[in-house]
Length: 382
Image (cartoon, rainbow, N blue to C red; front, side):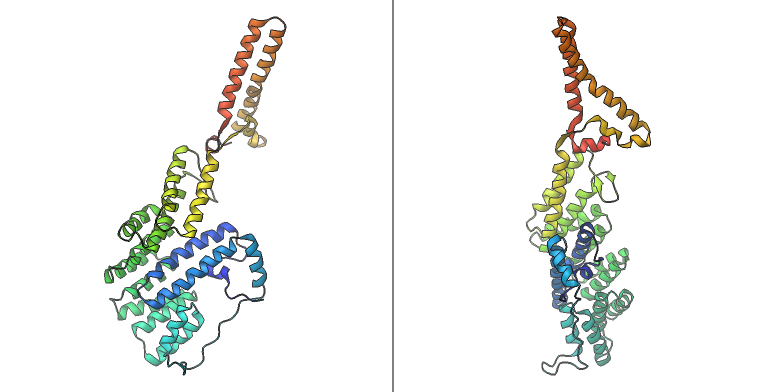
């Protein structure tokens, strides 16, 4: 049984991608498309709303093991193909090729949109709008060089259109030309200063490049002016979680390791602020709760015996030596307590009592040293 949408293609991930890769792709795709839902052009907004809905559905299905297994089974039957447009505009409603192309874009049907846009160029000539439509269609197909050329043609013919500059910025961003993207977003903002989406797009570029500290003041300024705007809340929440995840100094290939209470406090403050916004997106809430659960786990105390230091014993080195010494010292309190009880039983109360007190004291000291939060164990390398 074929599916209507290939969610893996929507996110740009392989079909065997793990949950972490899918989660990262969802975050990237949402940042790309959420800002377009506030575009001035109705068709652009409709296209973005379709994509955001698909991304949200992909997140819901692919991050749920049961739903993903059922979906994969259906996907094995293929993906339903879009109908190829007829060779002339619809006679029933009198639509032009350009109108049809815009309609297909609103449905995120990029193959049909590209075909109709090319026909519109032949019929209506090469004006700014036809170039803009063609650029959007080819961007949807991942033909970035074509989309870039066409987007530049549109802005060359109409330099005062916020939509055309916005689209050119989107193409630059997808091609990793981030400085050019920011320039075009800022140019769009000068053409239409009333729309907050262009500054949000600037913040999105910084965030996507691992610079949330630069993104935060940009999106905070937008949120301050538009506190009820869903996208302002989304981008601010997303950047706040990014800030939280950037706090730990110790990084790994898969993420980070918390090693201090100060890191925990700072990360928790960012996440609590994110989920405390007036409007909280499901993705932002999930990411925040994931971090908060991790922080809770890092604060839980557990007993870590000294022989844990022997994890690297077979490779030798100082940790193995420390581990061996720690094991010997660990049993010293037990030996002292046993000896103390034995001496007291043999009427050697003074020595026995002293041994008992010292043994209990050392045992209590060991307990204080080894029953510690997970973050402290991380710091010690246990």
